[in-house]
Image (cartoon, rainbow, N blue to C red; front, side, top):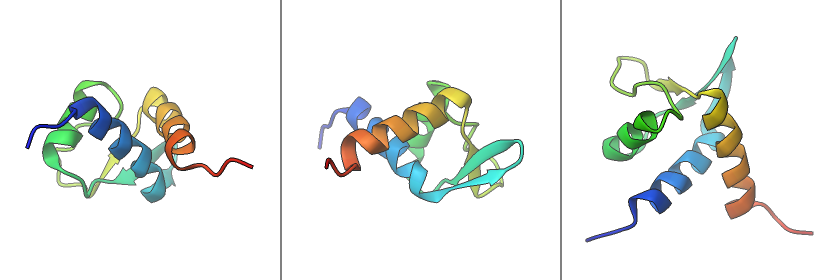
Length: 79
């Protein structure tokens, strides 16, 4: 099946907010998503390299900002 990779990347980045946790001085998120998506998010500079023994990735400042923005846009409740 063909699909819009950018849309999927956007939704996965937004969903990473659900598994974020602080690991001072950075924010991490569990990396339980498709490897191709995670590789693309890394290539875009939003997360650290997912190819590690760690079960989580570090979000870049831009990745953290965008993840929160996208989560609000796609899943936030409008009053």
